[in-house]
Length: 556
Image 1 (tube, one colour):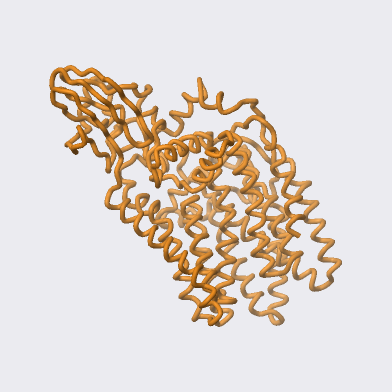
Image 2 (tube, one colour):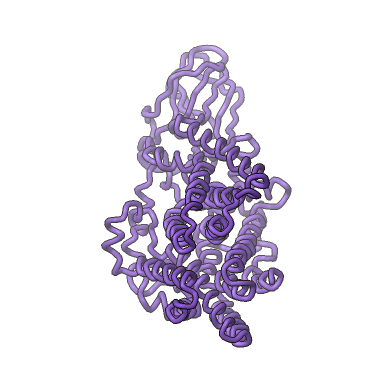
């Protein structure tokens, strides 16, 4: 069955298996991997600061943007795969792994054949084509891998109670949180409903603490990233993430778009009913989902537990879909954090996951009525999905380039400034309008630069100061930045903006006459150190769960 799913998934990414690259709305995927590679070279781990973003003044990109998929990408690049091919490989892995993890979950629930159909439903859906071939949202797309794993681990804990599944739950939640924090924000509450429903319906309340433990350990694994996101976002500009085009009020989806439209485009969503991209839940998906609810009601007396679970998931699905419609405005206005989602249609990720489970349940029930009918309907579903949506899974155009062209010339210049206001350090009033100079500015005195090097999170140089000087580095100041002269930490500031059109908040300090080594480097703040420590302890605890699981699972 696994091979069959693999074969059915191939057409979804076949167009990526060729030299070159394709345009996407978030055209920073290759750039982020390229910059993460520089963190690897400098042994900056966890990677928080990258040198080239912000017109090469440096940015705290991975202090706020989920890093895990880019660690994998940088590793693939490290072993010799060019960056643009790495991006394509990661998208392909996203297709394969998400269908595989969904099959794993659904096989546990309904058996092999319904699991195959559910995995295909999870793969061939308009929103996934939009994620890859239109938006190019690698992290968000890869989140689909972890949704089924989290549900599966919770199910196994309730059914078997083994400690190794607590470890799997922790790993899955930790990876989701460090893959896409917004997807975590809108998915983990659904997992909470799933877990509560399982323990109540199966009368396994005593196993709920294990789910709580796994969830806490998952949060702990991701603490190195999530704590700075929560407590240090005050030190960067985030107003552009929720204003203008990114105001959630402009991006609700109409009833027709959700349920009946099968139009596909490579544009953007706008205020009003006409969007140049697909925002459909999937026609076959919602039909099977509705069928599942009918089956659950009809079979309620025969299979009370399973029917109840399906009805609960159905109710959650309806609520998730409602949140994408303008009628839910009152909820968006009162629920904390919703404005950070930017697009209500992000909930299509949840609806895709939930409707695929409901669809698999429909096939499961039909197979129970008559196996031939179930298999026939399953074949029809697969054929229908390819007919309706198969052609969506291809780029609009293809560009014959390599890494050399991607990271040079006009293309390189453009990548240095994409989304330049997002996560701009707060000490800068506005983003820079020209590239950072290679050497520091000498504001006072006279200085000769004997050498100067820019690393991933540091700048270091040898200087001959002929007259006591004030230097301003081509580097944004940010909490944790530390300046040393001849190995001794000194005071620096960021508000000497002489010669600038507007203040950029660059690191500035004084240096006395003589020959000196100067260095500025990002260090961990107390919050980052705490997050790192919590993550390290969590890694040890999760590892211990797997190590000790054989002994304790036997006696559970």
